Image (cartoon, rainbow, N blue to C red; front, side):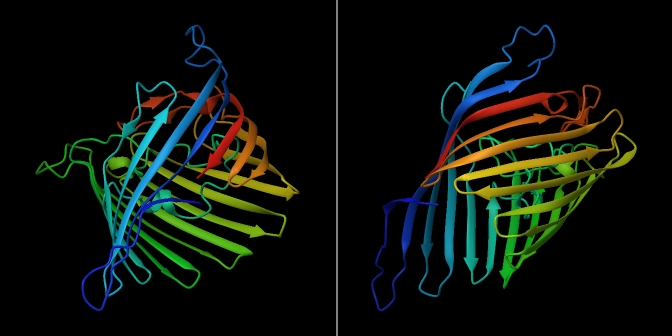
Length: 328
């Protein structure tokens, strides 16, 4: 990804030097988004709207004379419907060799592990084949609850990446409310360029005590495309149930065009099989035209939010999109 360099190399007096950089990166996207019966039948909402997003990541790093890198990130983001551009909480990091430790608004292990988002498609990069039940914690693009605090670590060696994250929903209080606990995630992935595997475990998902999720994934790259299989297990105490999701996906590239497809089965009560087809056309320099048509898990399936409440949403419907995305 190309980055705009707005401040470079700061010299430190003496024989050594520390490199200080501030960079801006991100992406923009806009296009048409269709959601079947948006807001529910009789809601009066339009099914088809113009959907857009602009994301700016502001990263600042400095490297000491012994090779330790300190860094911080802030994000500014606008989504259609927002009153204005919104900032988020800071993420701090320190890295040396292959180890990076983050504090604050951290990238969690469950959200960072490889392969889990490989079924995404369209200019909005969406998929019913992702984790479609557990309300896991992740890097917050906008505001976050007061007291939310995270610690995460990533260690890379050779072709292996190891991830750890710990999220306290509210570090300010002495005792968390009943049914609420800290989320702890562990994950690992490996790839030799042709074969990739990944695994993750997430305890007390989204701060819900005793809600655990598990992930296994594998993929094969055959040159012009790849095919993969992802498996998720959800153990939700609120539903007194444990159920699985299996997603088979693949893509194939010829020239500037990439075709994508997936099928996903969720064996929760009332669920059905979700599927999607999509295509990208590369315009070069990080820009593409993308579109998709996807069908969710059926009108009777329900999902669970961070409070353990079951609800129906767009994941049970037919959705489609076509638009442009450009990275910078």
